[in-house]
Image (spheres, rainbow, N blue to C red):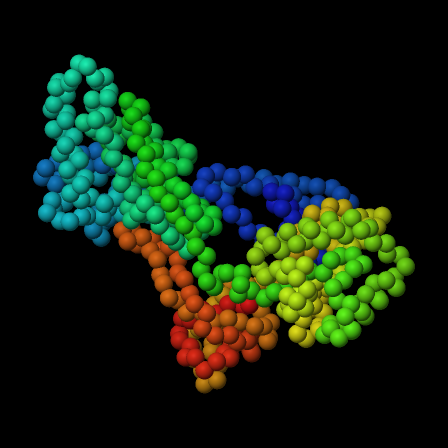
Length: 482
């Protein structure tokens, strides 16, 4: 029986045509932790089958715990990771590991050194870092002094409060300031907690981090950032339930190359009988009038106005979600006339469901690229499937200039998605690179637009472009389809 529909976690997956066997691909954005993924397949007879997968997302490195650090520079502790340990190094020197998931370590450091870096890597390639410096040594020295002075207490103050004041928990975050900015959507929050009274719980943004009750250990948590300002709260509570909180703000900025202003414009005409394009002298009059006449000549079609309005709203919403096209406001007639692409079509309710016919037209060449027909009894799903078809037909492809030829430039794309000749491209140059000053974690780059051009040839594994201006193009300049 032919497959008619595929859903992953209630999201429709687009495929070109029904068949007995279908290869599909769908991207999910998942947080750290365990996730259940439901895959539903439906055939033309309406029968469904559901398969459930459990996926464990692990982007965090191993946990590093220091149990002692004496005045002679001898450090002892242990390391553990559920996915398995791969390596441990101190200042790029290998520390021998003997067990798979949990192992102890002991080594000496030179106290006069500014700092030493202990780096652990798990079997999945995730790394974490713990910096051993004078601050850590001073904290352990202070701990020894306080432990030798436990009998010296004030009877008028609760003992737990006195212990907390003498041995207050300290949170150190590596490389992050009170206010920060990045260009990436994922960052790692790494640091160390020193809790002389032994830690009871550690939270990062209300998520409890699984830590053992120790005095000093590292933490490494992957955070997904929304656009704009993000606030990260790190809270540590010791065994006396005293809490210490550290907060930092991270602003996720949009790199210039990803801004919607650099995408081609798209105007979706209202899916009804009215139109902005009734002017005799408009460039598209012939195309639109011919298309409309073919629509209205079909006697079997009956446009339901509310159905058309609902479909239009859903389609606009899907295009806005993708951020692929710069959407033109339907109330701004001048912008609509100058748009790069136009969507024209109709929707009609039949006995078997709802049918939509969409023409995706180039404003400059007056060519209809394709006609997309879908049948579905769900307007939202129908709009989602139409949107998926168009976005797969016109993907955003990035690449880097790898060779400067006599009259053009060779570009290797970062993904082998569909490209077409004469597509407009933009050329950017990196002007800023951000990274964590302590751990070296990449925080993204910003770029500036230097030129425009088009694709003149498509080869296996690369494509050739030209540029409009006489600006010098360099190796590693970034190219993106508009």
